[in-house]
Length: 270
Image (cartoon, rainbow, N blue to C red; front, side, top):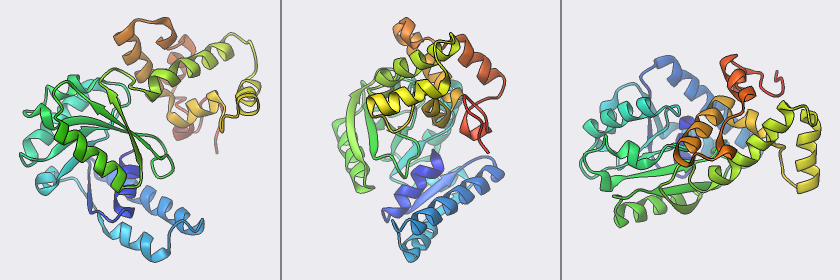
């Protein structure tokens, strides 16, 4: 997600810094960005000169001090609240007083993360969707203390990078995941119970409902570990059965079957 966000910001003509504590992760991020930009050129969405210019706008570093001069920081670490809080504290100690801090969380309430930030009025959620260069939506999540000025700047930024902002209150799952997760988990339960094959479940929703991708294939694309965390967060907040992760999902995550990124989920990938 972080490399995808960096790519779209750079393509929009803005300088961007990618920070990670792990140098090999930075190298993988660079490789992902280069590959994605190359594909954009092959598909004639970008000129080669535009792709090269975007790449030159991206600075990859493991020095968090680099964020001292930036206007906006977007946290995009894995969906673990303790990890996100630790990262938020580090960001808050490094950025300028007027900088806006955003989280790309897909389910954790922003108010939970804002406790690590001295000025919660400058804190909000900017939830991008994967793959970031392709998906046009960003959820702008407004917490209790988020100021109107912060919301206005965030929406302008989203539009500046060619995305469409939708505003939501600060509840676990926000708009999209609150509606999407029960649908995906119903498909997982259907498959778990042997009601239908994975192929027929996905074909049913593609051909019967006009969805571009079936629910189980979409689970694999999102990442089963991410979905498991989102389910737990939603269930913790609302205590409704439709948000509870099915046992099969828990066991697949424990077995390392995380979807496309691990090579195997509900389907196998080369």
